[in-house]
Image (cartoon, rainbow, N blue to C red):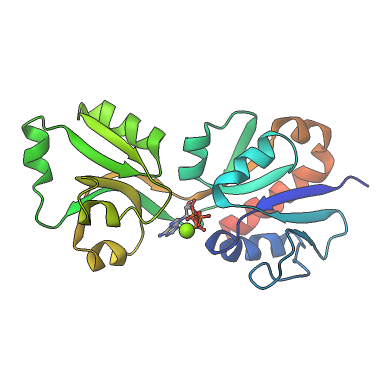
Length: 214
Ligand code: ATP
Ligand code: MG
């Protein structure tokens, strides 16, 4: 029997993925939110789940420790996608990558004047590419979370972050001023595993694909 390992993160990715997995007959035997286990067996003997940090999913799949995984486009862009086949947009965990500034900051005029902006973000690659394309000069400051705080305490003029409802921005007197791109989660497959385990992976891929469409 060929066994498949799927890498997932807890939280919204797991919540949104559970129905898709179920469509493929895969139900975790423990709840990752309450269990401390990092390897979860499932209702399918040939499929197990590993629970990793969202930004680590591409790495586990790239090196083949997981055959497939589910990761946000934000994470995949930062990773670069080496060794990964990305066959399917799952249309889950949807949000937008945005530039945001304090309510009272005139972003348009700062850009028009060619000001050099300090931008705090977790998404260095995406941010660098975006501002380069627009010809905006930036000094990027790498953060690992809670980017909204940076402009409030003078660490940065602007942030690049994921926005869904916009409530976190609003609660911190920030406004979104530019959309960089829409973000959703994708299925990623190790390129070697796809060839070697094609007979097991292909039906899973089809089940996910059908579940996404319905
Ligand atoms: P960690 O919490 O481990 O630092 P993380 O914050 O990236 O990592 P999650 O918050 O679980 O992890 O986000 C996982 C994925 O969900 C992100 O990579 C992104 O694709 C998506 N996501 C993040 N924020 C939102 C949001 N506000 N709305 C919808 N999807 C989001
Ligand atoms: Mg988080």
